[in-house]
Image (tube, rainbow, N blue to C red; front, top):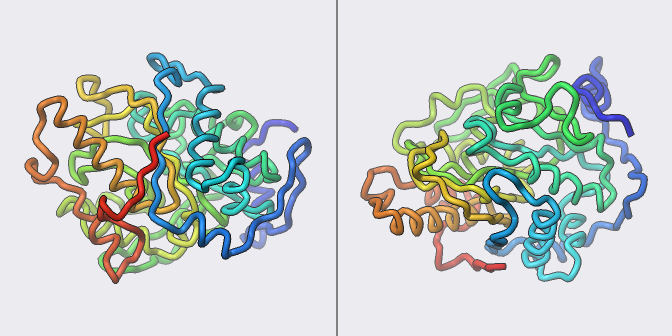
Length: 342
């Protein structure tokens, strides 16, 4: 199939005159279309607070990623998450051939501290393996410039997958604000018009104000006014943004890119504080993923002789807010989260 352009994806997804997403399922040549399991299967296997930390010291060398090893690492992580022998069981539990799946990357900091394109491609190919047509997969972020800085091809599509920013012609933000708690924001039309489900692809790194730039904060890239929500270590705003229905309802899976991580000085790249973690953090509970990510960053900070985030006055306090009765986004107590190391 020809590589997709931004215009081609928009025409297929929107039917521009009506502005609504096309819902008919498309076939996937060469891929095995598998039936989705029942809701009870999903509840039994995927709704507990489990975070898989999968690592392979040979998955990258410098900035070069061994894509074969990365795909194997992703497969092993997903299998461990679902307790299954075939990762496709998990993918088809979360995404069906009728979905339009957005892969929300984090590209603000450029190649050294952004989602690796190879991670996005590995996820996209895994979705194709369970019957999702490539025309139903969209790699996206706040702007086209952010995507380019991270190494994605916005103009021609990336590895056959459409790739665009909210600032692309014909996309933009909704006219009306959506409100929850202290947040009032206009959401990206990628979320409200183009997609029905997301794979959240954040980066394991420190954040100078929020303490942590992870899964929940990645959706600051889906609102028009993130600059307003950074006081008090971004609490409660990170949690409030993730309760907005299009964010909450589409958030099915987190695959945190931890190939190259940052324990201090983020969200921009600081070579002194970067290290090769060579891993992925995978889970369906974004709060739990972020809580485990926080523990990994703190462990590295201790090795480097740095103060804790609490001691520096910037703990990710929004994690506790995200798990309270007004948000119920996931588990924020480390002892209540099952961590599986692969």
